[in-house]
Structure formats: C-alpha cells, structure tokens
Amino acid sequence: MKKIKYILIYVMSGLLLTACESDKFLEQAPKDELSVATIFSTYNNIKTYSWGFYDFFDTYGRSTSWSATNDLDGDLMLGGRRSYIYGEYNVPSTDGRYTRSYSNIRKVNIMLDNLYRAEITEEERNHWRGVGLFFRSHEYFKLLSTFGGVTWVENELTDQDTDILYGPRDSRDVVADNILRDLLFAVDNIKPNGDGDNTINADVARALLSRFGLFEGTWRKYHGLSNSDKFLSACITASKALVDKYTTIMANYDRVFNSMDLADQPGILLYKHYVIDELTHWVSTNTRSTNNKYDITRKGIDKFLTKNGLPIYNSGNTQFLGDKNPNDEFKNRDDRLLIMTPPPYRVSGDGSQNFGYLSSNPSDPSREYFPILEAITGGFPYKNLPDRNWSGRVTGEVPNFTRLVPTQTNNGYRFWKVWNEHNYKTSSADISDMPLFRMGEVMLNYAEATFEMGQFNQTVAAATINKLRARGGIVPMDLGAINSDFDPMRDASVDPVLWEIRRERAIELMGDGFRREDLRRWKKMDYATEVKLGRWIKKSDYPTVKIQDNAPEGYVQFLDDIPGAFPEYYYLYPLPSEELVINPNLDQNPGW
View 1: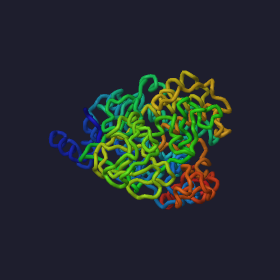
View 2: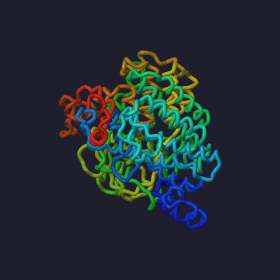
View 3: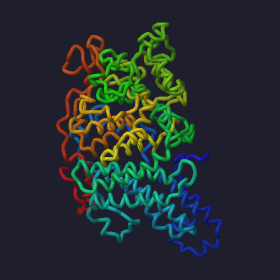
C-alpha cells in the first residue's frame, strides 16, 4: 500500500528523466522556460512536484518541539515560564511562521500559474488546482490565525510586482474570504480518492475547511467582527458531510497516537507515516526522558469526567473520590486520563532495567493500575507500567519529582500521550505515525459550530460527543441533564452545554496543539494566566517541591509568580520587524 513518507523529493531528477525521453519537446521548448515547462508538462510530473507540499504540515520531527509545545501557552499544560502568557513576548526581527508560509505559498503559486502547460484533461487540471489551493489555504490559514490580515499573493511574484511586494496588508476579510473561496473549490474539484492512499483528497479538504470555518467563525463572533455565520455555516456543511460518511472511529484512543501504521484505520483522514531506518522522529523518546518536562495542570486533570458522565465537582457525583489520595483521583474516571498521564505506583529497581513489585497482591495500591492500563491499551508495545525511558530504565515511582532517572515531572502529572515502545530500546528513532486530520477533531468542530448556530441537539451529540466519550468508558451526554449547576467550576459567561462541548474538545485534543488557538479564538486567554497547579502532596513527603502558599500540604505550584492580565493586543502576534523595514507600507498590529 502506498504511503506518503514526506521524504525530500528531488524534482530535478524527474526533470532530467522526462527531458531525455522527449527530444522533440527539447527542440521546441525555449531554454529559459525548459525547467518550468518540463516540471508541469505531465500529470506525473505535477504530482512529483506536489509531494514537496506535504512538508508544509507541522509534524513530529527530530527535536523536542512538536504540536504539544503550543499547548504550553494555554491553561491545561505546563512547561516552564512562557513569555507569551507572562506578557514578555517581544517583537521578533524575523519569524519563521511568517517567512516559511510565504515561501510555501510561492511554491504553490508556481504550480498554479503553470498548470496550463500540462497536456492533461480539464478535470485533471482542476484536480491539481484544487490540491494547490488546499495547500495555499493551509498556509494562509496559519498566517491569518497568527497575524490577522496579511498580504494576499494570488500568483508567483516577480521583481515587477512592486505593488504587491511593497504594498499594504490586505484586510482580514479579504484573506478569510479568499481562503473560503479556495477551499470550496478544492472540495468540489479534488478527486474523491486523491492520488492514492494517504494523499490529499476531497475529504481532507473538507477537514481543513471544517477546521478553518470553526476558527474564523468563532474568532469573528467573540472578537466582535462581522460575518461569523458565513464561516460557521461552511464548517457545518463540510463537517456534516464527513460525520455522515465516517460513522466509526478508532476504538482504542491510545492507538490513535501510538500506532506504527494508521493505514485504513477508521476515522483517520490523513497521517504522516514513519519508517524505521528511513524516516523517524524523537517525540516518544523525549517524552520518556528528563529532557522533556511537559506536564498537565490541575485544571487539565479536572476536565476528565467520571464514568457516570458527571464533572468531578458536581454536587451529586458519588463516583469522584477526591484528589488528596493519589490513587483515588484516577478511579472511576475517563479512560483517556490514563493515556495522558501515568497513574501513581511504586516498584523496586529505580533507574535499572529490572524491577520488582512491592507486593504480590495485584490490587495493592503500589501496583493497582498496572492491569487497568494494560486492559485499556493492550500492553506492550503500547502504554504499560512501570514507566520506562527508551533504554528500559525504570522509574521507580510516580509521581517522580526529584530523581533524575529516567523520567521526571514538575507538577506531578507528566504528559505521556505519545509514549510507546515500538522501536524497543532504541533512542531518537521513533516510528509511531502522526494523525494530521482525523474525525475526532471534525466531530468536535461540528458539535461546536452547530451550537454556535443554534443547531446542536441530542442527535448531533450522539453523532459526535458521545462517540468520543465511548472510548473513554463515559456514559453518553444527555442534554436534558445539563443545567447551570451541572459543573460548579464552569465559567459563568459560557453556556452550560457549550461548556461541556468545549470540555470534550479539551480532553480529546489535549497535547495536539489546539488549546492556545482555541483560547485565542474564544477570547479566553485569561484562562492561561491563572495560576497553574499540580498534584496534591505533603511537604513531609517532598521537602523540596513547592506547594501553593507554602502550605504543609496542598497543590504543587511549580512557578512562583502568576502572570498579569493578558494584554488585549496579544491576541494577534506582531509582524517581524525586518518585514516592516523591507516594506514600509506594512502596518504593525496595534499595540506592538
């Protein structure tokens, strides 16, 4: 089965082969147009050129940084002091988010401008135009969500295009309308099956339209801009088509993120495939080491419902046993909680590759969650206990605040969503696939957008929220049971049902890189400036760990200081200063 591996494609190799096969073409093509004419002369040549577009996606790489890093700027994860939420972000001289997107847009525009050269049918030409517009929209969506209105570039620029090169920014309306226009064309014209398995097809285009429509529609609604309904409606249309078509999703949540091969898995629309000794990443390795102290906050842990579908602080919830005893707070909870952070345990053999149980009783508190986690994930090579690093060295107990061998936490809830042992005892050569577009997100987009448009009901909940809850072992959402007192911790400015939809989004997408952007579009970045707490501990057990208010027991507070109020102008990032020097007609975002 064909899989996109996103390995660098050397287009010139294809050029030489094609040129050698056609002496007649060489005789007719002007020398200064030879490369472009050859690249875009045939269907397969265009396809080869387009492979490079797949590198536009933010994916697992050979570094400690991946999509979860974005969530550190939100409220549900902790990774140290973050300048963005502490009001210490400075205008950068350059910003890769800006320059990379424009470089990528230029690559796409070269293809779009030269499709007329190809000896292909009009249907095939529209397919490739749709593919190009998909990727261009992907890049403009990133620019729009980060900077707001930016310069729209419809064609490849030359030195003569000074009115664009040195012109002012286009408005948010222009950029958003153009993205919507292009994605609608992509949905209508990209082949339903793309160009083979795991390639851009019409449904992947719908998934991007679903993501974009929700973002732009809610941004406009909560930031006081007009025409939010247009984008929310586009999200609903695209999402519903996918929800109606893909009625099942992967039943095992852990395997969505820790499988060696996501091919043909239900609800996976596009993924990045890794291959041992060919293309690997470091994300799982770094998750399993002291190099990467990404934690989930107290607020993040509290998002997870109990099995009865109730928030943990609901007055009638008898299943929640409290958070003062580390074993109790994991009981009767959404199974996905154990996929996010390791439960408490203790074994002998700290730091070695061998370990021993402290008790022969499997239900002993020191090893109570060993069989529970294995039943949820299936065990090795998926998540299992005890926690180990890539070499098999054992972490003797969780939480591990102070010992450096081999995994550690800052606040007591270490993030281990992408923990797996597929490439066993091998460092920095991880081979778990990464989902890029999946129905879990689309279902959440659909649920939220329908609520915003007054269309959310029990039928929509059954097709979306309840399918996600099922793999956490949670009873279905019952809209009739949700009232103003359903969750005492709810933000009073958010409707109770919308609060529950947003809760499910927070759980399902935790660590996937959506949370900061969700808070930005909801205009709720004040959540991120709240104090970030961790596990409840006693000072006598962990003398060197900081506890809130320096109490003898309480919640861990890793960072001493609390951010100030989130600045209004921070909702849009600043344009890099070098771009303003190059083009004096560019206006900086207000406040910077």
